[in-house]
Image (tube, rainbow, N blue to C red; front, top):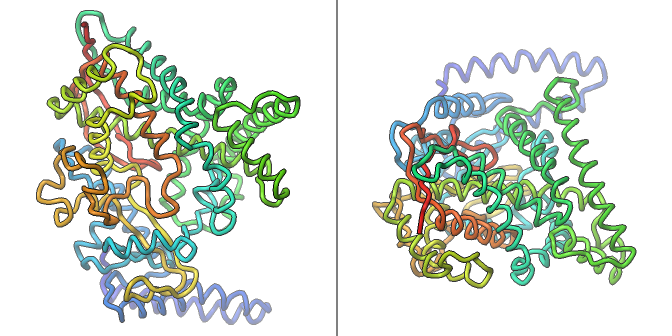
Length: 532
């Protein structure tokens, strides 16, 4: 990320030479005003922001025209993920967020990066993080790369009044009383996965299985069932398409967005548009079928779509159309169900299985808890809430391997965080992964797997500080966190009832981000059937 001052000076001289030519041409063509805006956004404003940040003690690389630190960040991330980790260590920060770690190591905790022409301040103080997350109207989520919007929008990306409206309408679908009706769907999806494993693993013996794709499919199947009920077969196609789209979106996130680039008829852009069209047409067909059924007096159903439509219709009846969602809004929320609903659960389950394969004592304790609570019976909603040890294990897994490594917000006007004055247009990066692995916070064993940290719950473990952020925090905390934890408990209980598992010699430890934190080379485990 380092660039010497001579290189910076040469870059500046080159820029001003080109700028002079552009100004002359622009004035001659009557484009002076537009050109001045470009110059301001690409040079004048970034340099002013940099000056203000440095005056407050922040440090970082000098601003570099247009790309900022993007080239260095891309190089670091490519180098970090070019090969698997040499050991099964949980020290994954250098691999997952090498750019942020490099900045902190070089400049200290008060530092910043350049996302193109936008300064991104790294925030590591728990009190500052708590303030930022609580003041969600002041510190909003940064504008998304337009290429990302093809994957999902929905309540997770909206701001202000629109966010408040959607959150209000969606909340009823994730109430605990509604979630218990989804437990049978979780069971069916996991049973389908285990029936496949039953055929793969011999009756007497063991077998190596890459469990990652199966867990992804299971989680996608579960969200298909819980979101669309009887239409889940159609929903499966949406899941497959969204999975392909997520890979393309991640590629877009790792490069500078050039305005208008998404309209170029490239092969990738054409494919992304085709996926959007098929996803939205499939969802529209499912939604219209449900609306028609409701109009003729049928029940709205206990799935997420039915609960959302019922909540929306009630709001429109009571307060008018402007207080409800449009059909397009409902489609976007359904797309979000897929993205958030399966990615987080699959990520949690795969890292849990990997860590329990390494720490077999905890695997045995978890299996014993399942036997005591369920025996060999089908788990039910009330009993799932009795799995205290497995809950502790999940919290520790999410600490070491959070689904999302970094949270971000942005200022739209000059704002204060504690004693800091943050200029308008600055991103605020809150690296959850760094906080979760910080020895000053969690002790010398911060990188060790120790679920006992959470034996008295999250609040006791964190002492009320904003240092544990697997689902975000503040009013915008993930609405589906209880959904994800409930599904994961069902799946883990059923797996532990039927199998013991250990790491295969072919397992390569390689966490990387594709929207969520995933095993780059799969999760190759050796499964052994259990016979009572």
